[in-house]
Amino acid sequence: MRILPFPALLLLIMFQGCDATPEDSKPPGQTPEINQEKQLRLKLLNAKPGDVIEIATGTIAMTRSLILNESGVTIRGAGMDKTILSFKSQIAGAEGLLVNASDFTIEDIAIEDARGDALKINEGKNIIVRRVRTEWTNGPDTNNGAYGIYPVQTENTLIEDSIAIAASDAGIYVGQSRNVVVRNNRAEFNVAGIEIENTISADVYGNTAINNTGGILVFNMPDLPQPGYATRVYNNTINHNNTENFGARGTAVAGVPAGSGIVVNSNDQVEIFDNDIKDNQTANIIISSYFSVGEPISRKTADAFDPYPEAIFIYDNRFSGGGNKPDGAELEALRVAVFGDTGAFPNVLWDGIINSEKAENGILKPEFAICLGNGDAGIVNLDNGNENKNLSTDIKNHSCTLEKLPPIELGFSLSAG
Image (cartoon, rainbow, N blue to C red; front, side, top):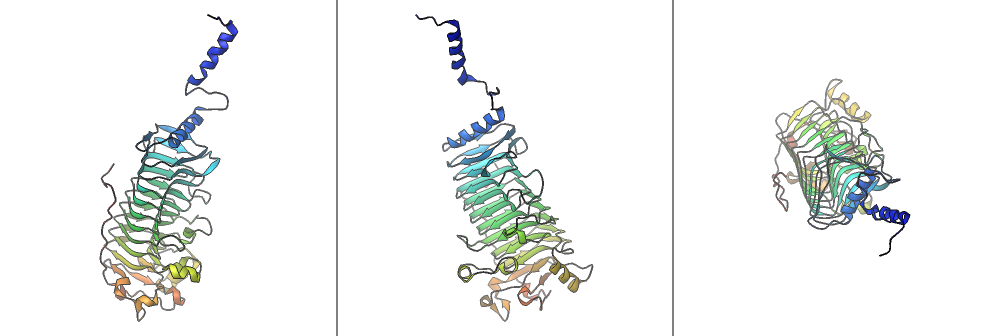
């Protein structure tokens, strides 16, 4: 047997021990936080269907985006105030966490200060986002990421019991999706608290949207793969959404006036009921066509895009305050001219622009009407298409009802997790 001299034996022992370096040791240039980031990145890279990736209590400083491309995976933290992925020192990547997968669940975790969107889920089916907090901890700022919780082109999506704070576009945004439930969340100090855009069949209920620029938005935008319709907004608290608009110039939400409770733009079959809506200074509910908030529509776009809001049913909401200090000189001048120095817009503000092909004698046909069944709540038709010449508060043409929409059925149980 060959006996190694002592110096060689010592070197051999040292090299053999390199693979067993304790996790909390600090090799040159590497901290425990970077170890945690690297380990999480590897877990996502190597994930297989059925995997549950658990992340313990603590804050992990992230320097790059995280990406998951495997379906059937769950990411689970210890609580949205206990497990925090902090991207304050992010140097690369467009998102905090990007998911390109189906049958995905994420729960009990926070994503803070992402350079771009906090959590983006792209083209997946059967998505659950539960008890997730996305936040930019510096508060409202145009330089914050655009979206907090951001599923796009998804099907069967549930977002519940989550919190979104200080996104420069929308705190919770669901775009170009189908069969969606957004329930029991809190959105605060975003430009748009909750936004449903170009989405077919959505239920938005039990949420609290306060201190945003606009509380809950239901939009259709042109040049996207599908138009949206059939959204129910009910049993929400939508108060004091008066934060100055800090959206980036040129984005769709940059035109949302501060003081907007619920905004329906260019969307059809929207049912708004059983909400508590209070003290939104422009209007508690705004209904508008694309012509009031967007750029002129090209002929090509006009052939494929319906810019008019139709079949809107508003009933049994509880209104208080609002409409007394609209954002923008033009709206403020209209308020004073029509309602006096101390007056306020009615609870529903409508731009009054309609598709003449769906109207008779200048009034929308019954199946396309904007119907209001809300006690003594009023509506103002601004007649924006005619330079406000025929502004009206006559409720006669809005005293109607529409067939109610059915509840959303997802492809999985809606019982609480």
